[in-house]
Length: 322
Image 1 (cartoon, rainbow, N blue to C red):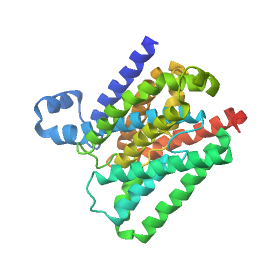
Image 2 (image 1 turned 135 degrees about the horizontal axis):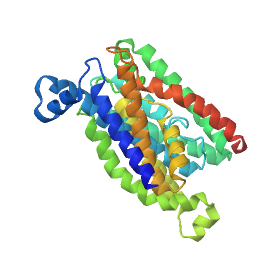
Image 3 (image 1 turned 180 degrees about the vertical axis):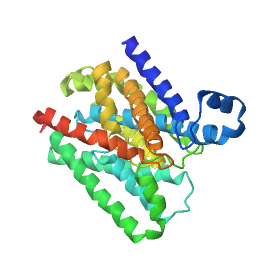
Image 4 (image 1 turned 120 degrees about the vertical axis):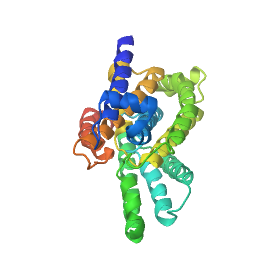
């Protein structure tokens, strides 16, 4: 287990260094070190452009990975993730609404709007699932339907407000392009506040996974724990979406990859999902910037290329959940 943690941490550090080297302007390791220490001619490229993107990629990926783990723990559905059950779409719709109707809104308004949208969507889905007694797979499919409905709402906003379409489209594709140090505190403050809360919920989610009767007999307040975990998941996913748009499937991939290596205990699973989620977004952003510079692909496109086939595989694997 210790070896796995060392390897994962080493991969995060290695890809971070590689990300500093790759871009429209190729830099050597000595150039990076000099820019970090003294500034100089490469100061803007390294310290003001690539370095903040690394921090944002790691933070956003960690937020999505931890959010996905919490959602799967609450719903007890291996197919659940923030984007598949509509949380990301709800956050995206509200953020797009702000971008199109009030394009001059202050920076802090976008995360608030995204959290409101994600919270509304998540609670609505839970209410529908409880009222209709949906099975886990049907709940996931309902979330996909809600996502599709909200996506059509986003398309409508873009058609009605064509002048603001460029700003919204850059954000909706799931990209870290144009982000800088100004956005870094939002995601890292959220992580600093919500990761301890997530770890506090970890053993309670482990007990809930054993069954409601077992959890209640051991003193777990199931509804309170589930509601708190869901709020935490929605906040992390919504703030992540507000910063870099809808980067799909990270909240699904990261928890599954973490379980393959670190098992099912939530304390290790939450940390591993955060690291793997950050690694996935960082790799996607690095590839997006380095495949054909100076052209930059959206990172969300690359995660979807991997995530969509994996979701189909999971649907085949978990047929019994329907």
